[in-house]
Image 1: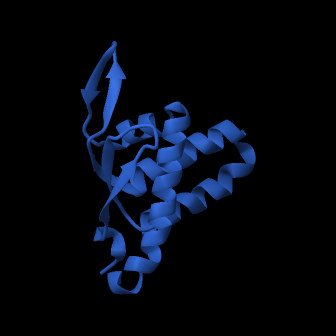
Image 2 (image 1 turned 45 degrees about the horizontal axis):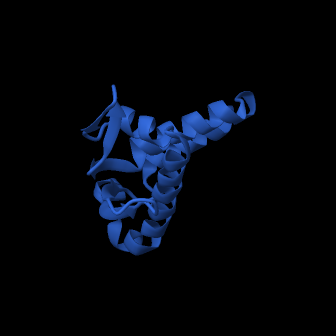
Length: 122
């Protein structure tokens, strides 16, 4: 069995807030993520830095994050809780500095899960 079914809930704490969010994250070495990154690398020469970043964020939103809790967006002046979807994750990752911080944290956490879940996940 591949390790794609293995994931772990981890807590993200924003330094400027007492609120925390939970993300269910797969390890970085999952096959879907690896294949998507190979494909991105193959076309990267033809992409601008912005397009490369957007495609990378989309890959993370589809292949590393599989669920979340306590995430809200401000829409029409109102704060609303949003359910996880790859589209919502991409929207989150593209929300300025906090989105970039969360994206970096997800990738770093997924990397840490490689060794934590690595051999036992196969």
